[in-house]
Image (tube, rainbow, N blue to C red; front, side, top):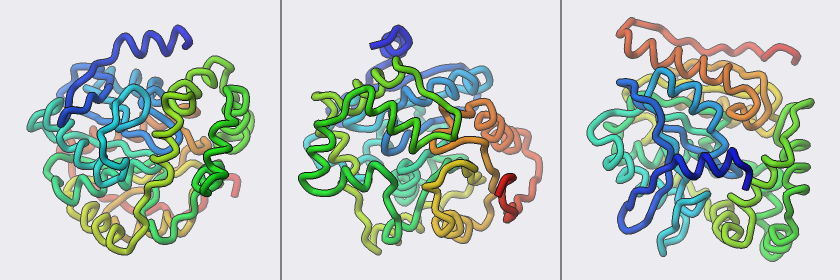
Length: 303
């Protein structure tokens, strides 16, 4: 564990939700509260740069989802519906009656959709970062598609080490020229892939309900949100499906879309640019100014 990860762990908090302990960071003292939700191959730790920037203006809450990082897992299967249920109770405990601004990366959009289906009143705005919504047609990106294969996924998970983690994230999940450090790779391995986390991570990747019933509930959830929505897409993320982006835009018609100079993890690669977009959205709400959002259907620069 690097000094950075140790400090992150020491500064975190634990809260018991329905008998299960959830680890989270609670930074800043602003009147607006932002919650940062991670996706498949990350934890709350991977938001540390963005959280520090946003905490200068807002209260920022960064949980580890159940079974990830330092959060415990309940006896139930690690499904997105179960995660959403616990997330609702978590917000009830740490944010009380205050509405929050949700930033959902990757698979966290699905979890947020189920939360909104039952408790839309908890969310003030939604920022989608490289997310997906059309579950029946979603194509899992590398290496998740390999991890999801029976037996082979278990073998591959057992073969991982920090050096291989660094190679996979650098080569497949970030923009060209960006390089994670050896310390970062060791920390990420310890949070997601070592002996104590391997089983949970594998289950988290595999247990995705892709039925039309799940899609219907997700659509109803995100449409129930009254607040503003922002769609952020990384220019250098080859795994952001044009179909998924169009599907989100058609489902959330009152949304704006912007492109970020990053790969799949802009919270690590371009935290300043990501924070700027989030701040613009939140400030447009808190200033109570009328603002019309339009889709930017032009291609990002370089295409």
